[in-house]
Length: 132
Image (cartoon, rainbow, N blue to C red):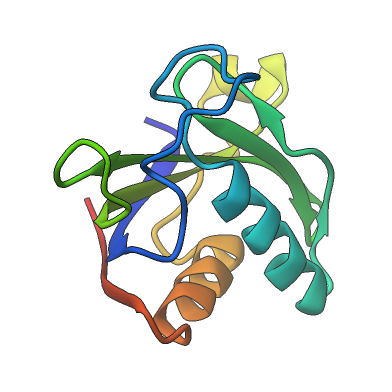
């Protein structure tokens, strides 16, 4: 696997209202992706997007000469409520050559993952930040 999964709990982001533009009714994370984009910009981390996927939202990012996909999705504890568990998957983008040779994989101490963990841990209203 070439990704790190971060989990956390909060009610700060929408998990209850399905927007008309959602591809699927489970495509929550638009507001989280926009919030994270803003926080990453504060850290001088370049991002584009976000854009919707059929499971949630994706935010391309570049940091220290590496490129990433930052994927966000959430699940409410009960339908119609905003309290729930969120997942951020940080996947390092690699060239075909790096994939074939097994090089350039994301590491546990990846600096972008550390920045995202710090952003989440420093936000009041977000708890139980951890890795899966």
